[in-house]
Image 1 (tube, helix red, strand yellow):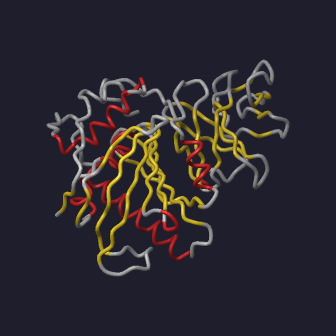
Image 2 (tube, one colour):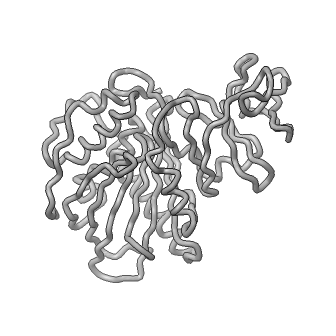
Image 3 (cartoon, helix red, strand yellow):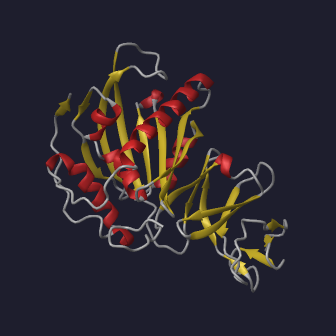
Length: 323
């Protein structure tokens, strides 16, 4: 498993994008959050997903691999056939239930036994899903710690070089009223395929980090807004990144496909950098890296990532920068 810079396995506080919908089609699905085994149980073919600790309290088998739901708030262990209660207080042998948001296109989880503030995510995702539909876009293995995937939303200086953004507004960064970290800027590009405009196109960009492992980016504003949910979880060799996109109900399938394809292309562009990054290099950050430093300070508020932020955030100046 990839460790944080101080050599410790991260404590997984806050919200996480645990799985895309295609990963939890079965009634019982084995999942993992870092080294922690989890099991997702779907209540019926089209029912809501619930998530529990996945390690059998009897002998340690993974309940998500061969376990069988009984329909009586229990799962039968695949190792010894014991009935394991789903939720604390459901018997001598039981597993803890975790807080879940089933967004249909993606499953989000917050561990019940790892204290961390919600930072407003439950409210934000509920508001988005009243008008938008989530669609899974990307699942990919990356050779860097998960917080570096999320940090990319705040590394505004990489957008022109890696993603060929022609010109950008200088960003503003701030902590929101519920402790979430915000960054806003504007991208000036050729009109993307999912927009009807032509020629030079200005698109508002607003990203909100709700944990070191989850960021929600809004492209555009108002009726034209689209959202990109990016999550990353520790894995034996770096992390697994997941991306889901949210577009307004009734959006044409071709438009959805274009945004999904755009997300895949952007991920591949970033992957070239991530998989060849020297994690041992000592960074020499300056004022242009202020949003990155702000993100690392945000991570430091989660105890497991205290070693990530070694400098205080530098105030971000107003104005514009471009190429």
